[in-house]
Length: 177
Image 1 (cartoon, rainbow, N blue to C red):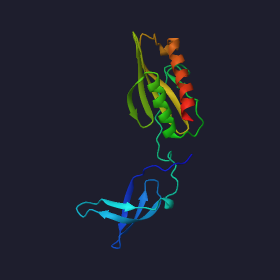
Image 2: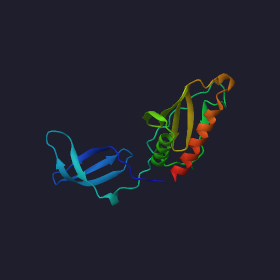
Image 3: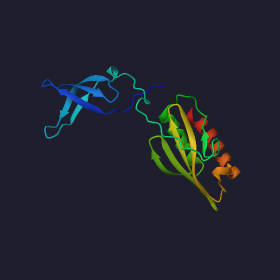
Image 4: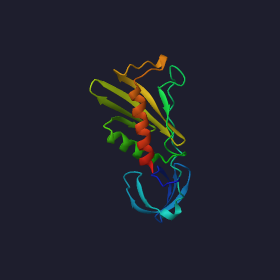
């Protein structure tokens, strides 16, 4: 799905007749009318006809995070997500993930491009996980836990961990649409 997103622009030329040509980060050239120019700096505010802007693929500049290399291939450290079709709409996916996490009482520790780190803390245990995403896939990366008997070398962790991931998967699927 294509969507118009904010893009960084570079002013190429400002003409005395108050028109300008800009180029978007994705290389698209646009012409616009200067509506405000600050002589003390290089900032220029342009009015651009939205019909002139082609739909910009929101994934064109997205850099996928690197997958963690698990201690033992196929263990719980990496669980592949499959609740949404690909290529995914990144904005919709993030929105669904945030709603799912908040609805189950997870604490969001950080939100970086391609990675949402969250934590569940209950009674005498806690678990920190990274939700890693890009347009063509997403996965859950185990980070750390307390009292879940995690042993990556033996592919052992408390069964609740898998249940929590499955519940999130169901919610993400429901909320994505």
